[in-house]
Length: 418
Image 1 (cartoon, one colour):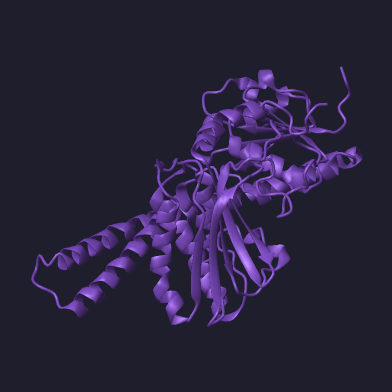
Image 2 (image 1 turned 90 degrees about the vertical axis):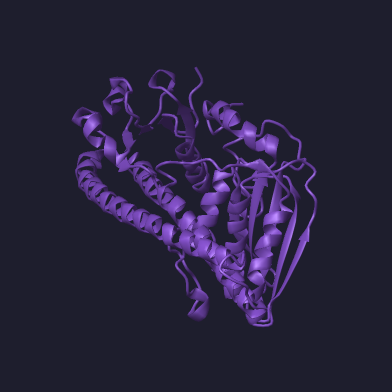
C-alpha cells in the first residue's frame, strides 16, 4: 500500500454541504490535507481527523471512539442531543447543525496546529473541552434567536398578504371607480407590498432553510424575464438618484430551470445594493451570457479560485464549453475592501460608510442562499471603475445531474490519486 503524502480529513455521513465546506476550507489553506467522504463508517478510510455527521437511527458504530484518529468532531442537531446518548460524545468535540464555515475552519485550524505538539495534548484537550462547551451554549442561544426571528417574520406575512389583496380589490374597481392618480398610487403601494412579501419570505427561508432545506420549484424559463422585472422595479429608486441602468443579455444556448420569483429577488437585491453604493449621476450595468463554470473551486480561476491545475482536485473532462449562465451586475461605486469580498455574503455583514452602509446586511446573504439552492454560486470582485457581483446558474441538465455527480465525487479523495 502506498504511503499517503498528506494527512487526511474524513467526513462520515450524507451531508454534501458539509463535505463541500471542508473542501473549500482545505483549498483556501493550501491543500495541506486530503479530504475523503464516506456515507458509512464501514466505507471510511483511515485518517487523522474525523468529522461525524450524526443522524438518528444510525448504528452505534458512529461513536467517535471506534476510530483511532487524533481528532473527532461530532456535528449534530440540537434536538437530537438527548437521543444520541452521552456515549456518542466520548472523545469528540461537538458542534450543532447547521455548521458555519467560520466555526468549522476554526476547529480544523486547531486540529492542524495541535497535530505536531503531542506533548501538550492533555492540556489542549482540557482547554478545548471548556471552549467547546461554551461554544455549544452560544450555538443554543443563537438557535433560539433564529427561531424567534423566523416566527416573527412568519407573523408578518399574513398582514402583508391581506394588504396586498385589498390593493388588488381596489385596483379591480370592485369598490368603485378610480381616478388615474389614485390608480397610480395604489399600483405603487401594491408593488411595495409585493416587494415586502418577497423580502419576508426570503428572510424566513434564510432563518429556516439550513435546518429544513427546500429545493426551489424550478421550471424552464427565460432568464431575461426575472431580470427585466427586477430592472423595472428598481427604476424609481435609480431615477431618484439619477443613476443610469443598462442591461445586455445574450441568449442561453441550453435551457435554464429556476424559480422565477426567487431569481427575481436575487436580481432586485443586487440592483438595490448597487444603487446604494453608486454615487448620484452614476451608472449600473447588467450583463448576462453563457459561461464555463469550473465547479471544483466554486468561482472561475482568476476570480478568487485556485489557478488551473492547482493541487487537490481534478476535473472529469477537459471540455470548456458553457455549462452555466452568468450574470454580472457592475456599478460605478467604491471598491469593496479586499478582506470583505467574501464576508459581504454573511448575515448582517455591511461595509462602507454613511448612507451606503445603511441596511440590515441581509440582502446579499439572501442572494447567496437562493443561488446555492439553485446549485449555483455567487461572488464579488473589484473591477476597473467599480465593484461587481456575479452569479452563475447551471444549465438544466447540469443542475439535475449534479446530485449524482456529487455522490460519486464524494467517495473519492479531494486530492486525486496519480
